[in-house]
Length: 143
Image (cartoon, rainbow, N blue to C red; front, side, top):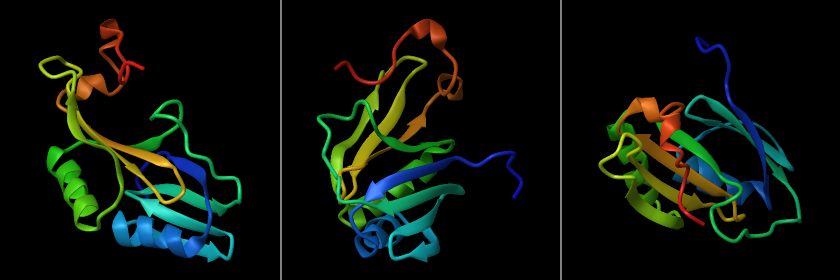
């Protein structure tokens, strides 16, 4: 691996077969080690670990909890968007432009997995907005 660090996220699911259908078949993650109660997934080089639980609750809206990826190339973002549509994944929010015409402009969409986990995938038109543009003072949608 040529990266200094990889992102790791553990998240709740109800069962491993449904997890594989969404994350492997739907999103295209590579499956890794697996037990009856957990599954390691490779999401674009980052480690997700699904752990089964019986305590699954939907949240009201996209805040405070969701996870996903920021794509560095718009065509890659569009490929995942088309894949999600082709595999009929559940869109929590369809694709849209946020903050158009500003240095914070980005394209985004949200998916909901079968266990109420929300995933956001976005592409910033100006890479400086990923960690910078602090003077703008805007983050996400108004609640």
